[in-house]
Image (cartoon, rainbow, N blue to C red; front, top):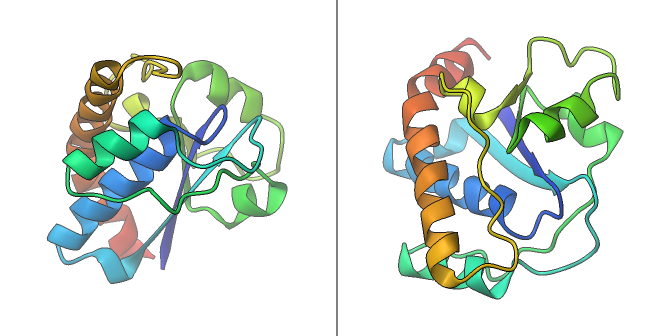
Length: 154
C-alpha cells in the first residue's frame, strides 16, 4: 500500500479536502485499493472539517462530514511514502522533524511541478473554499501520473 500524507496547519480545511479529492481521483482510476491517504495538521485540535469545507466537498459529491482533525505525529511522518504540504512554510516546519524525510517531503505544488502555495481558505466564504478546492484538484490532477508511478513501485 502506497501511503500519502497531506499536511496543513489545522487539518480542518486544505488537507482534508486534498485527501477527499485524491481519494476520489484514485477511486475513479481504479487505484483506491493501492493508495492509503491520510491528513494531519501542524497545530491541530480535535475539530471537524470546517463548515465551508464540508459544504464544498458535498457539492463535489464528496464527504468530509466525519473528518476529525489530527495532530501531525512522528509516526504519521515515518509511515508515509510521500508527504505533501500545502505551503513551503509547512514543508520547512517538517524538515528535520524525522530522519528519512528527504526525497519524500514536498509541497503539493512542487510535487505537481509548480512553485506556488495552496492558499489558506480558513475564515473565508464558501466561494474562497471552492477556489481552494479547485486549486488542490488541479495540482492533484497534474501530480496523478507521478503518484501512480510511485505507487506502482511500492
